[in-house]
Image 1 (cartoon, rainbow, N blue to C red):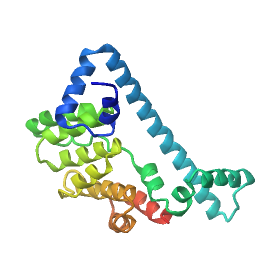
Image 2 (cartoon, rainbow, N blue to C red):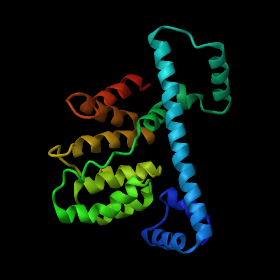
Image 3 (cartoon, rainbow, N blue to C red):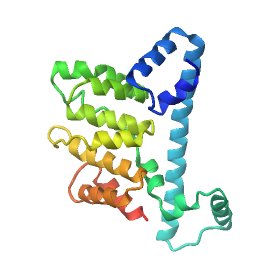
Amino acid sequence: MDKSWIDRYFEGDLSPEEEQALLKKVEQDPEFREEWEFQHSVKRAVHRKEREELKSFLREVEDRRSRGKKMPLWAGAAASLLLLTGIWFYFLRDNSSSLAQAYFHPLPNMVSPVVRSTDAVRESGAAFRAYEDGRYAEAAREFKKAGEEPYAALYEAVSYLAIDSTETALRTLSSFSATDGDLPLETYRKWYLGIALLRSGEKAKAKALFRELEAYPNPVQEKAGEILEKLR
């Protein structure tokens, strides 16, 4: 097993058996564990930096548009650089992916304080520990083991989104439905499905979901409206 397995782990490309073998290697090999921890910390830092840069960029563009101001000279130069590197289309024409990146944040653990079933909490305990530690590939595997509870499928899908396994997240989010009872599970299923659809370039389907979410009071109503306003 070489260190390329670590890249595959964070990309969600390992089978359950391969993940178990890799995690065993991490436990037993200090040098391998050091590389795994380094890549894990880098990936988390990159995601945080990218989200903040995208959010800052979008805020500035929208603010200047709302005030009817032109972008300064340096912004024009920066735009030219983006054009030369092939990212102009990404940012300024079809901004689906950039918005999906800016608005994606892993869902906090809202289950443990609400779900009273001791068995349910025990079954998902390892999954939530991995999830809250940022070990999303492991968390996805553990949530899959937790049974067919809608909350487990939701957090499994969010874990896949966190490691950029968008297609797997799409399949998971499309494979179940939920209700907004004690927890707004169906609302969040639609929210993260919309994010996944934006990442995949399916803007029309994503817009339909965000319109649904904008139409009634819920935790992401305002964010859904913001995305609809900014989508081009």
